[in-house]
Length: 430
Image (tube, rainbow, N blue to C red; front, side, top):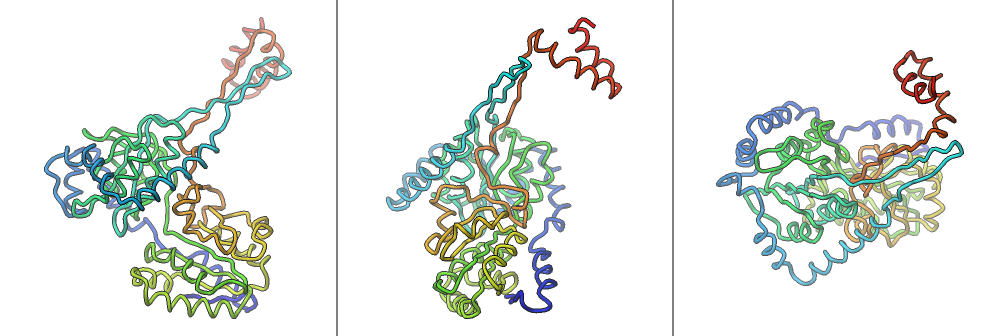
């Protein structure tokens, strides 16, 4: 765990090194991924069968076995206990309500020249959702990816999920049913991304692929971009916690470990103006690790990538946060709204001492698919807008064209595009 202090002479160099730290890169797997994509394009379902046997440790009987049946989904849904079913339903209801509130309105206006201008929103035809299935199962990821697509009006939602050993997580299937997923396939890794992008005999291609995954999945999304749209190339999870002296050190420590337990490349950073809190949190992290089931993963994340930064005041904390542009940001201070006003770059922000980031992972309502690796400087979290397209339109009669047409002719001639100019001028009687 790194310890930095803005009052020390070497802070700027140390902070720059923290910003530049490469926690995970897709460069080392790009060749492998390219090969897998090529296999899927050339061999279709057979490549999916071969790669599933190789990477997931089970051999499907045939391509039909890759498709999860309606009976399997219903059986999985029926097996969920009452408490988890209620939790799943609450999460789904809240996610759906927040994303319905995002739906935009079409535009129609008539300007002074007499042209009628408009913009309409329309849903994508088909979307592919990737759901991780390696170190943990994520029904919450199903809800966060599928529900916005359904709210946006996407006609077909296909889902790929790896099944190590052939085993399916019942809660993941129940979440998919609740979210309105149309097709589920036991396919993971780069081969799943390739199948959704290019299509095979069993999996029809989609228009956009969303959802997080490992380095192979991230690299595959990068390579198929252009053939299909993608949400982002997600990196390891990260959180910045800004906390003051009034915070409970154990609360802060567990919040940091909540990100660290995702995987060894995750990053958790505490920024505080209080040295005593910093020391207490560091001790609390070590104490909590002794009892954490995923202590090996969380401990490696904290030791390799964790950091505690001492600052002069909260304004300095906000300034550093804007440079970090974290995926998640917790503001555990007396006046979090005032501090939020100073934050420009963060994927999602959680305000107050009783609003841990984990509530956003499951039941708050806003999406938990967020920009990582400092991309919050220019990117946003998943929303209904990722599943919608904008189409503009123009209507003009003779009088409206007469009002604006001469300017179009002049500009077209200036650019040397004679046919452009003539297509307008002929209608003007020129």
